[in-house]
Image 1 (cartoon, rainbow, N blue to C red):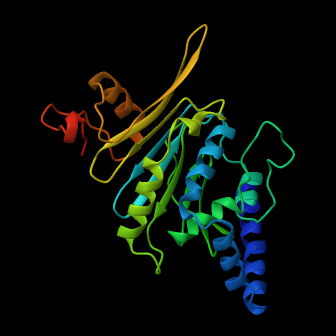
Image 2 (image 1 turned 180 degrees about the vertical axis):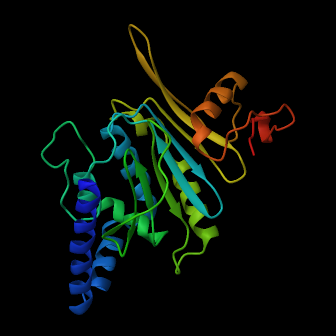
Length: 256
């Protein structure tokens, strides 16, 4: 109960900040500054990967639909109240003085507001949305056990859902082997596109070497690997086994 009261106090503080920004005509300037800092709006994809890395996740799944994006990871460090305070601030990160954590949540995550007015995060005992860039609000529901989920509805009035989906699709398909190069915990990143096509990047290690390989969304995916993904993606909309007739172009297994 104490945590809920603290979240409510944080909400009230953030509301006072937003009201002050509006009173002083700072809000538009803040949004413009964030846009200039991150002209590549899909930058938040990397922020989410960094959060998963810092949470000691080994797998991250992006499930892209036509009207929203859901991101799930299996990190063993769920969000704390300090993390909520950090993600609803600018330049105030719980990771700043921790050399083992590479994420700088706060400014970078704000790039998500190019696509949504209300991202939702469910992690551990916390389930909250962020409105007006800074204000956390309690929401119903919890992430599956051992998972953290980010839900990003494409409801920004200046960006149609189809445009948002197209931009994020491009960002996901441009992920490559370098994505995992400086991430020590994450071994697998998978993504599912609106048409059901799947892509992934995977790191495998042996006694003497480590390799990273990428399979694009329309390349062949072995059925055994696909079925393994479906188990990992059970919390997302892609949860049923691929059928032999669900073959996409170039022999790609499709789901959906």
